[in-house]
Length: 141
Image (cartoon, rainbow, N blue to C red; front, side, top):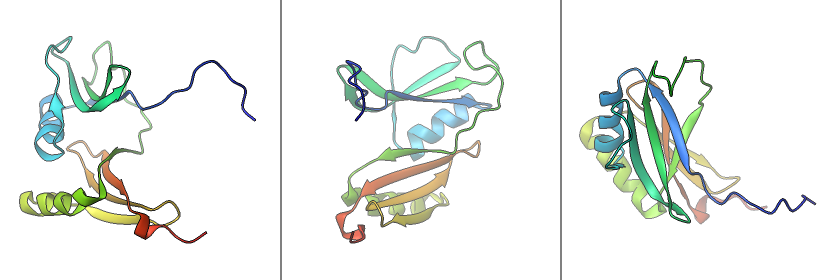
């Protein structure tokens, strides 16, 4: 049994990516993936893009940092991929959108947990997954 610490994280608050081309990355995540830029960004070398409402007033965001700034020193990150959730009913729309704009993608099912992911890459080579739960995919236990 895990000790009660008096707190429990309830959602992902932010994913931050260092970017060689901040404008290109911001365009991809707004124009291709469909995230909304937040207004009032703190600095010209940082872009915050809204993912969802989040928890207790903290908006869930994707933060893009221009590489080499004081807030994003060095490369050397170990990001494998980022996954953004959406309803199962929207997976066909993702595929249709990617086909329409010529965005390469792969689809992968994860029967052990009942997920289907649609994987693509952003302009700097990071893998981006749009994923949904689909009970019909879940393997019998």
